[in-house]
Each structure stands twice: as structure tokens, then as C-alpha cells.
Image: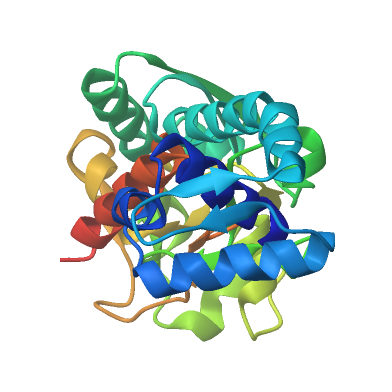
Length: 289
């Protein structure tokens, strides 16, 4: 790569008819350009330029090198410029892998709507995945995973998003029919409903009548009076008035549910991916305020 850079400087020197002019065009000190040209000559084992006080002349070897390389270098430089421009473009496909429960949540739907309105030339593809996927092989740009899930590649970037505190909740009808537990020690006397990940996270010996990967299904069954649900407080608040859903045990927290943001590389992210990552982080950060 160093010799390719030196070849570029050599071609620029010929085109600008001098080392000083080439150095100015490259944004480099004249002494550095001169030194790099000398290193190129030593590496090739021949003199390329005849230097005078006012201008430069090509040797026979220098003329042959210039004629043979200028076109290819132009093509390579144009390709690199196009790659940089492509990385900065806000268009094309952006592919995401998310749990089904996240994809159907109002927060995620609102995020997608806002992103699509801001960047109308980007097409979004959302795939349902509960477990970590090989982002590079599957051509997935971003994945959202439950915080407890393992990531398939430890080299991937993993960032924790704002967690949601959880509580036990039940409908007024359920509590009137089956009794209200005085504390968590009495939960075993009831039908318990929970997300599989939240249930596994709890450090207590509880039996669950129903477990699923879909938090919305837990919410719906709890609202239908099928048992006591372990839900994020924001889910309880949304259904509190319509279904007479009550949080139990006051302000006591029963664990929390969190998400991790996964992407394969921090350095070479396309701008459309970077914008989505920023949008997701800002959205979840605002939920915690």
C-alpha cells in the first residue's frame, strides 16, 4: 500500500510538472513528497525523475512507468471515491433482526416510522430472530437481542439499551376471584405468566403456568384474567385503565427486561446504519427519563 501511495505521488508530480505543485495538491510538505519519490526509486531500482531547480523531467524508465500506471491509478482512485460516497449515502437496504415481541411494540413501530420519514430512500427489512445471528454471513446490519442472550461472535459490538423495570400485575377481577397475594412468597399459589427471559432471570424458585418469548402475549393473557403476569411497568401502565390491571406489591421491582444493540463493526459503518443506531439509542434513552 505504501508503494501504491508513492506511485500516486509520482503521477501527481508528473501531471503538476513539479514536486512543489504536487505537494500543494496533495496537502503535504515538499520535503515529504521528495523523500517518498526517492524511496520509490530505491524500491524499483531505477531513477524515474531528473530534478532541476525549476522543473522535473522523466527518465525513460519514468516515462514507461507513468504511461503504464496512470490509467490504472485513476481507475483505482475513482473506485475508492465511489466506495466512500456509497458509505455516506442515505439510500439502499438496511436489514435488522429483532425479537417478534419487539417488532410489534409501539416503541419499535414509532422508531421505524420516524426513520422512514427522515430517510425516504432507505428501504428497511426486518427479520424475526430471538437468538444471535451471524450478522456478516446473513447480511444483517443491526440486531436487537434480549440482554441475557449470548452473542454468536464476541468481536461484534454490543451496547446495552435502557432497561425496563418489571412488576407483578393482575386484573381486579382475577384478584377478587383468586385472592390478592400479600407478598411474593404467596405467588406460588397463583397461575404465573412471564416472558421466558425474565422468568429465567429471576433468582427464586417459581413455577410458571405460561412462558413465551412474546411479552405482548403475556400482557394479553394477564389482561384476560388468566393469571398474574410479570410485565414491564410500561406495559402495565398502557393497559391499566382499559383492563383494570393493577401492579402488585407497591413500587417493588421484580427484575427488569433489557435489550442489547448488536452490530458487526464500529469503524466502517455505512451512514444509514450509523443513523439507525443513533436513533435507537436516543429512543431508548428518552424512555428512561
